[in-house]
Length: 322
Image 1 (cartoon, one colour):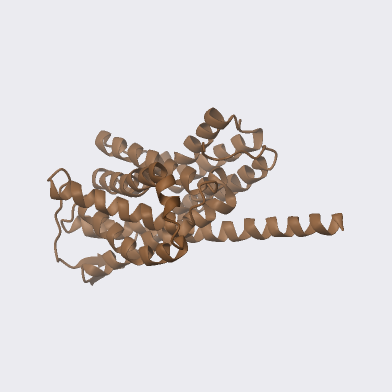
Image 2: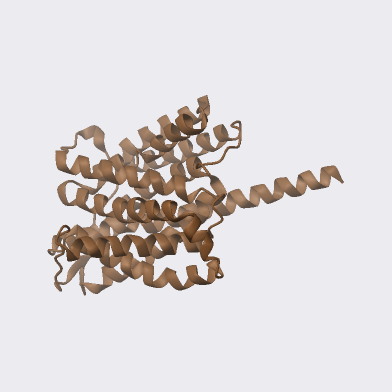
């Protein structure tokens, strides 16, 4: 009987890991589409604030009803976790996306993504300093492989000019991205993933709207057609895709993945967003990936596997303070 119980537990754990990886990849695929879509809007005169506000607003309108149902009237959960939810909405949702799109306005999408996705290293350091989860040898090897893979995917070995303002905005996006992974992985707060995503999107949208109303966040939009995949499409097409696909689906699947994998592994799997960003740029912006970039993608996946193997030897500790 004991053996059967252990086998069942192992099977359940493996199933949870597989589903977590699939959800993390879905999140990476959808998040990776945002840069290519936003670039087209920015090129026609949209400001980063306008793009992010519409994106988050649409996502909030879609996810909020599902979050309400998932909460099942347990409003005390939101009150008890109001600080956590506010931090998630302001930093992980509004802050990360606004900073990323601002960075893209100053520099190429590739270098901006590379800087933002130093977030997994920040997550490892946070867990080490806050919870004493010192990374093992395999985790460090995985981090190194992933970092090298990112350099190859973004083809930085040929030399890339970085704008200081763009770098600072990208670092801001990195902070928001790290907060996203750490908070998303916390299961102790009792908030259903849909409720957390909905609350974060609503708070993020309201905060951006307020900054726009008082004039602190420039809001400019146009109705000029956008070029995608060599064709002109109506301006609202990329906006709808940004809101429904790259925000609503991406955030919900990302939170669900982090709950299953933990913030460390989820953050490293999310590095595949960079690969997907390159592929989307190829399909929509006609930027063809080179063989060295494909090799980089393989290194990223190898790094993810190493991090996962390294995590098995670490003690289980809560991701966030109670």
